[in-house]
Length: 494
Ligand SMILES: Cc1ncc(COP(=O)(O)O)c(C=O)c1O
Image 1 (cartoon, rainbow, N blue to C red):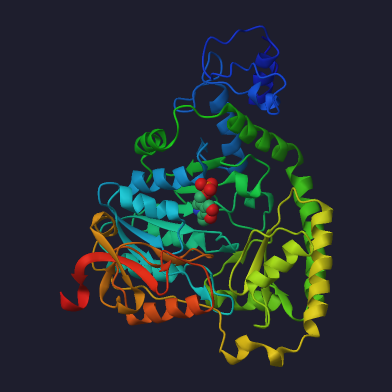
Image 2 (image 1 turned 90 degrees about the horizontal axis):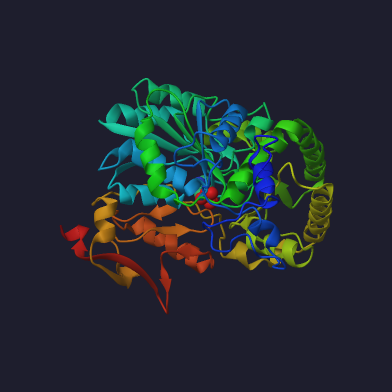
């Protein structure tokens, strides 16, 4: 078998074309001729001779991960075949397992909450600034991180999400400075920012000195679903423990299709990345021109928006995330999303109460930008003529839902999750202790986490969301709303 290059795909291809007979896993034996997925099965192998081992890399996988590390300027980069989720779990557990205290942005992905549970961690939450007009999270303020770290003894790690799902970036450089002055490692969930090095105007978390950085390359780069990276840098990270947890949270049979997909992603980027980024900029600027023409719709990211960013702790916004908002309650984010999908066959990433989100990457075709621009102008013209006076939501006092309150913590989250729970009427739950996460989806930021006291403000807010027919997860909607609480514990009585 000829090994002409060190790229994984070529080696897999050479094996597929060779006469080596597989007396090993996987069970399909690469013998799937005529099957619709034959091309994938042909290169689907396990750790046989010459193909290295993800959990103890010494050969082709090590080289491949080193190429990815070089692309990001990272000391160490690990391939993840179970998404950013397993990177988040591994990084948090490596820093704070067995009950460690972590300062954690409340807008963390659910995988971070799973780590809190598994590691019986003690979370200290920090609220991102909320961009009130739209109801999405802005940045985490470095001063606030500093203030909390002054107050809290024994914090083992700071965990933040940047960019957010909506593309908003925090000032990671400052946050790292503040945390490192106390020798506390910083974990950045950069799941939505794997493409940032292609755009030198952005700071990447690795360049800012973050100790652990997790990226879903499948989200914003040309790589297969599930593929992600964990970068580990500096002297505060415990490498041995990190690798132990990667072995725990990743399969012992990682897919060579996924790993060669990652390898090919960085081959493509090192060859064509700059050109693709240039093309993206050109197409994306078309949408800036469209934005100028809109009157009812608004694309977040205008000059005026940027001037306000500092109020929301936002350092920068990723131009790959197009937040299309509706200035008037005549239409809401879901209706905008539905119209784009049903009338124009444009499938958005998601909708929230006041906006729809389009994800744009270097792999988007010109057609994608053209069709979206034309649709937005056409919809804007139509809604411009609509009679807003007839809008019932106006008379009902419709407003963008925004809850940026941290509820009192009465019990550790993992204890609350393991306690006996019961479902009771939301309207009668004031003073009870939450047994489950309640969040508005999107954006998915928990409004309440297990162990927190249910307050009057919380009940009022959730009722308002239910009235607006928003998707509140963690609440059961029967005739009346029900919420899970810890059995028999009423904080107002303890
Ligand atoms: C901010 C953030 N972090 C982590 C994840 C988990 O990523 P993955 O799906 O790659 O496991 C997601 C997924 O949506 C996310 O939005």
